[in-house]
Structures are given as structure tokens and as C-alpha cells.
Amino acid sequence: MARRVFWKGYLKLSLVTCRVSMTPVVTESAKLQFHNINVETGNRVASRYVDAVTGKPVDAEDQMRGYPRDEDEYVLFEDEELDEVALESTRTIDIERFVPASSIEWIWYDSPYYLAPADKVSEEAFSVIREAMAKAGTAGISRIVLYRREHAVLLLPRDRGMLAWTLRYGDEVRAGEEFFGDAGKEAPSAKALTMMKKLIGERLDDWSPDLVQDPVEDRLHALIKARKQVAKPAKPKKSEPPRRDNVIDIMTALRKSLASEKKPEAEG
Image (cartoon, rainbow, N blue to C red; front, side, top):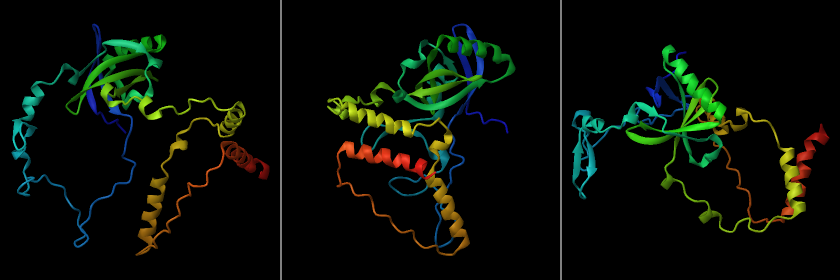
């Protein structure tokens, strides 16, 4: 199946330029999709833009972009007018500078995209940039326009292509100090730390995508299957939420946790 191209443009580093294509790493196509249904007719309910005051539907040709000027007044713009002020980064990813790839914390990462050469002619230039970045352990910093907004973007070599991560702006990321306060100011006891490390070791495993499967999706599939088979399935019993008032000391909790981790091995 041919890959779905989300964005096409150019990757530029000084005088080296090549055509590239970009597509989102994350997809929601495998997720179950539900529709709103009119229970009286059994037909789907369609969404339409309506006038906020009159409540009447508004056709696409009668819609414009508006920026609020006063409480009930807007400055209006045609789509073509907004396109005219689009930045160069609308179609060009110009690598402005490089940083050590390990220097950017994951908290700044927003959305990932795959970046690849768009044609055979561009493969050589693309490969040179990618391999040089990989050997130097660096990431490229640039800008790109997506959904009419400019984003900072981080370029990382990956396999035979690159990852393009849009980055969060500085004012979007809160400082952790105001939330953590003095938590963990006092060092834990050596004994508790040793037991905790042992407990972590009991659960240590190699990374696999199977570790992050969506259990809700499986339950929804089971619910849909049951609904198809019977007219009215019985409502599932609500489980009592776990009590939070039985506080025990950390050492007791660690001992019980370690004991429970070893039980399956003993039974086996």
C-alpha cells in the first residue's frame, strides 16, 4: 500500500536542498469510530455550521475568517489573504542550527512525523544530511508551518529517514518546581531503597509495543460483538473503587510487593 503523504516540501541546509515528504507517525485509523444516531429514525446525525444568533445553517461560501475587534465585531479575512502572509517555512524546512541530540528533554516533544526523500533525485542529498547528523550525534532545529501555524521542529536521524518532532513553545511548558515543592527533599533509607530497586528488577523487561496495548479498545470490541449477538446485553456490574484509607508504612508495602512478585515462580 502506498504511504499517505501529509506534507511535501524541501529540506534545506545551507546550499544543499532536496525534496522531502512528511507523514504522521501516529495514526488513529485502527481505533473504533462511533457515529451520532437519531434514535427515532436510525439515521446518522450530520454536523453543520450554524449562525450563533439566528441558529440558521451557514453555507461554506458565506463563511470567512474573523478576528475579534470588539465584543460583537470582527475583522474579516479571506483564506487567500491569509495564505499571502504565509512564511517560507510553509514549504521549506531550513535547518538553522544543530544541538546535541541528547540535550532536549522529552517534555518539549509534541507530535512526531516521518520525514523521507520525496524522489530518487533527492535521496543522495537527504542521505548525506542524515548520516552526518547521526555520526555527530546531533539534531537539527528548524521551523515548519502546519495547519496555518508555525512550529519549531526537531529533526532526528532514524533508520533510513528522519523523525521530525514539532516542539512545544516555551510558554506552553510549566516548570516542575512549583508542583513538586519539597517532595523527596529527604533521602530515603538505604534499606528501603535497596528493596525498591529489587522490586523494580523483578518487573524489568525488554521494551515491546505489546506493553502499551489499549485495554479499552478490546473491551469495546467485546461489547460490540455481544450487542450484535443479543438484543439487550445485561449491564456490567460496577466494581467498587479501591479504598484509599488503609495507609500502611512503606517497608510493609515493599515486603508484601516483593513477596507477591515471587509467588508465580514458586507456583511454577
